Length: 128
Image 1 (cartoon, one colour):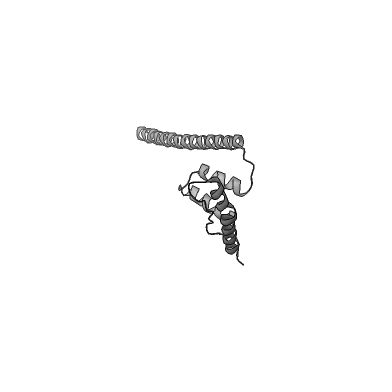
Image 2: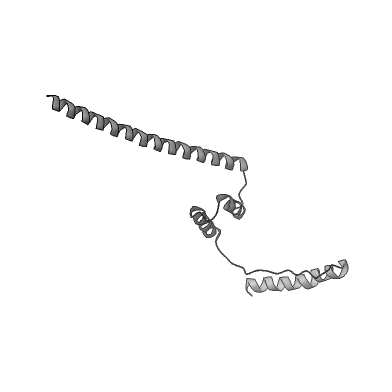
């Protein structure tokens, strides 16, 4: 028997032997029924890779994916470490952009110095 068959059989038994009696004795307004969705055997690593790709593509925020990964791999959640990592990453990105901006400004200054030096050289050549 396939897994789907076992689950279907379990749901039928649970519905008739437990939920029907709860309905009868507790006088609920309607009968409860347990249902099972399709069972898939997707690998956790493959799903995680798909989620990471979705984050990199800008389709999901990292925070949306974080809970799934923590639960799927039975990881211990440490919000303090996560928040510190985010702060460190933001700081590194700021420093990187400042370095990039400063290097671009430095290159601009060098171009101006070269241009000024060339003008002086031409001026001195014309005086001779």
